[in-house]
Length: 111
Image 1 (cartoon, helix red, strand yellow):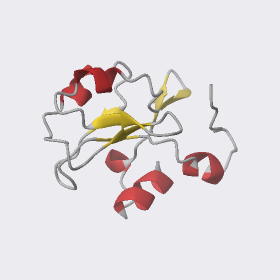
Image 2: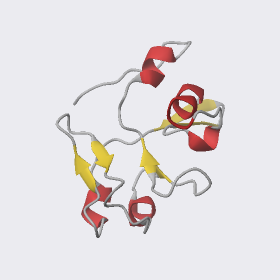
Image 3: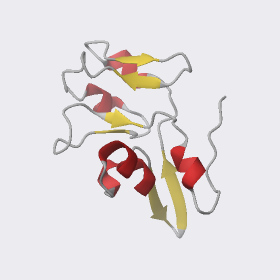
Image 4: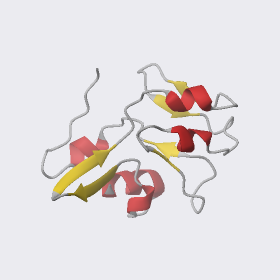
């Protein structure tokens, strides 16, 4: 989460990470966008689209910050933090978390 928040927001702040790692029952759980596209289907301005690699992206110029995508995300992987930007954000499969994971526990996989 640290590498993610510092890369995209220049702050070491877990709220700003595009992935979330939480602990439940003594086990760590990773929450990252699985690129399902549910957010695309509910966006009234079509601000969400798939890039050439199939990754869902946010077009900041089209986004009106209605937050429909945040509310309808089935994996709770679309985030919004009004203190830093006006549009929601999510994992864009950049792979930095996998490269920087000290335990080597993360891997970016194309399915």
